Image (tube, one colour):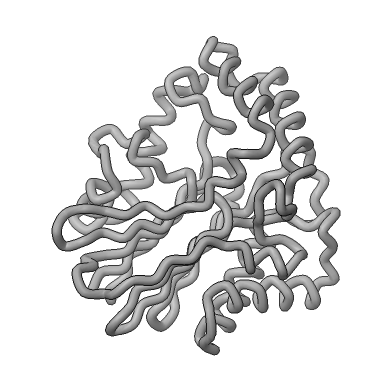
Length: 265
């Protein structure tokens, strides 16, 4: 497959990373800590994990096993602990002549586009089940026009504190951090490659709903192939800039980091 990729920082530091290997690709989204209480920068962790995944996936075995070994390698190399380590999503795809596999840990996206024109969107939305009230509170406040002020930051602190109580627990959600066993809970798919026209991996900063002309992932794919993936990301960022107070699209940040990887047969 031919691959295209681009990444765009939402602010001064881009905490997304991506890796493209022989017949596989991954997007990782390091999670921002509003309190700033992590032992390392989330982008640093995402980069370390991406480098480790680049080594473990070619060894064969399941994608979940490759991610588990990568998390373990990073943890052991840097003495990381669950209490203070940053976390990251993992959106991973692997393909052969016969099959296409996806693996989702956290709320990034893996999209399969089919030759017939349909698409299958895969993500791990279990994070949405944690801190439901806190998430609703900050979105309501943004929708009312209060913007990204100190009150918004206070609500995000409440949100992340509540999320932490459910992190890597059976009644919560699973994410890459310092607990390798979390990888066993990723969401996997596998199907025949026949009929698959392309794969798209993206961090959650990439949203067709915030693109001025797109309604589907195929729309984003078509623009990326025709005009480059950088333009896709920039047009979403420009649209967000016109909603600077988050009233139209209530979201935790004015601009999130954006990364997209496309694999084309």
